[in-house]
Image 1 (cartoon, rainbow, N blue to C red):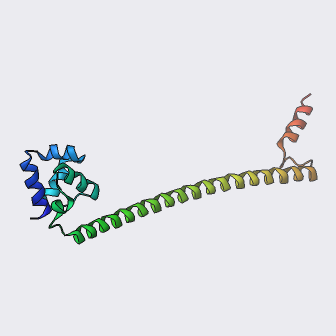
Image 2: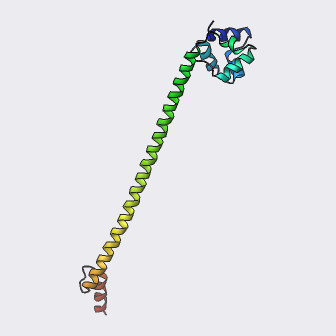
Image 3: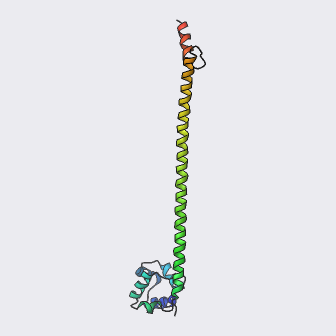
Length: 151
């Protein structure tokens, strides 16, 4: 008898619903349903809990289970989970790098703009000292002269 058939038989012999057995094993009713349908198998902890609950040895409970198939399924699930976690980590790193790159770009833009403004002010101050009569560089001088003439 296969494990899923044995589990179904044992559950019905005890007069339990899938919901009740799920509560005892701390899993959902859907998990019990999958175990009974042969779509998945319980992990080792749950197998021990089931053997204790039904008062039988693990050998009696799991006899006829293809242990190699369970191992392969478990191994594949672990691989898929591992790949998924790695891809999430890579996405997170890429997003962090993109954000850092953007912030760095904004910082350099602001620094460059500040340097450009300072250079323009220095050049215009130097030109004012070289050509003090010219009102091209400083309009304040020409306004001051106009104001003095008005007196």
